[in-house]
Length: 282
Image 1: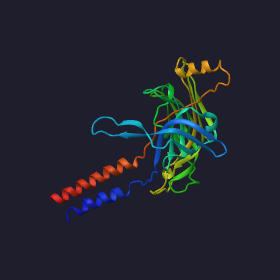
Image 2: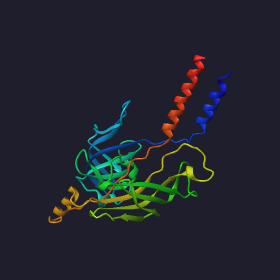
Image 3: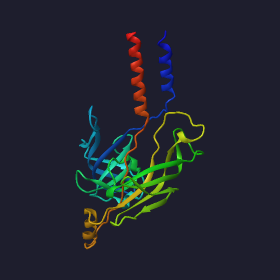
Image 4: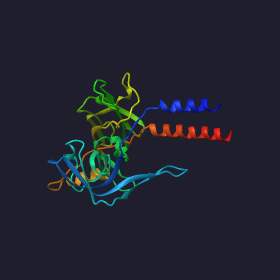
């Protein structure tokens, strides 16, 4: 009987944790095969799926593994994707609810392995697992309009966008939909521009919100990075400027955010197992 009280308390603690149902996200690399403005889709050829292994000791090992599919097609996050991405561009993209179907982020790659980075993103930068070119990074915080909530998400009234140069905060802006901010104060010719197009924010920060199950919030940004002078990208642009019908690429980057629900729930589950184990021994 003496074990009932601590077990009951532990179960009650687990019950008050936030509830979240994260829809499956699949990240792939590949080459743009084609896009269709009429169908609002972009197709990626020779897709390879991103995944990580977690050794008992050390850091996670992440890589892209070729898939059986020869191509994947999905709807684009925003029409700007049709002017940013062209057939032949190397990209990384993340879809929601399975492979293909709906791209929630598409990023154009720059450089060669193992130092590939991103110069363009259309969609949610937090869903791209590669860094931005030029050592830039972003911190993005959509702010909910609490009068528009449905379940776990609300329409984002604005987004706080912080631009970091390495670990140094270099600029920020509270952007309403379709507003932009640019940082270009370095002396190496590089710059980064971020536009908040539209999006969602979690309803959890709204007054009187309660834990519930539902999809994760997704937002759409347009990110464009001009790498430093002397980089391979800059050299390619100088060369292409002398050629007829040259095409000029565009921008990007952030690190994917992960739901904090899973680690906390896992810790709680381990704790519960430990308490039950003590109960059995005694």
